[in-house]
Length: 134
Image (cartoon, rainbow, N blue to C red; front, side):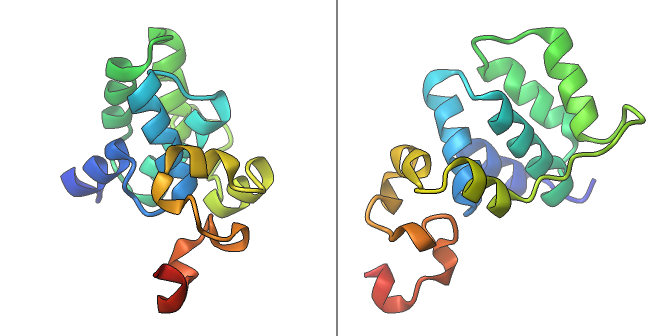
């Protein structure tokens, strides 16, 4: 595993810079819950993009999820890490954002700093020009 403490901290705090990931993580921190699709996306992102040990994510979910179930949690994280022998689902975060939050309503709800960002940029705020950032 190449990812370390900094990557894990940014992920767990919802500060990765990828709005859909960050919105899901902030929802979890705030409510103790996240949708199944959100769980798949953030797990894939932590393990396959940030290269953080999947067990750290499983531990984090254990401490945060109000609907925590040991079997579901650990088996889902094993699957996200590609350790079950089946297909590995490496989610494209931008594709998922466009498919499941096309107008950016979910992202804007959990990331108030993006409240006034145009819809075509809300999932890719790094593409904003300096003028659009002001």
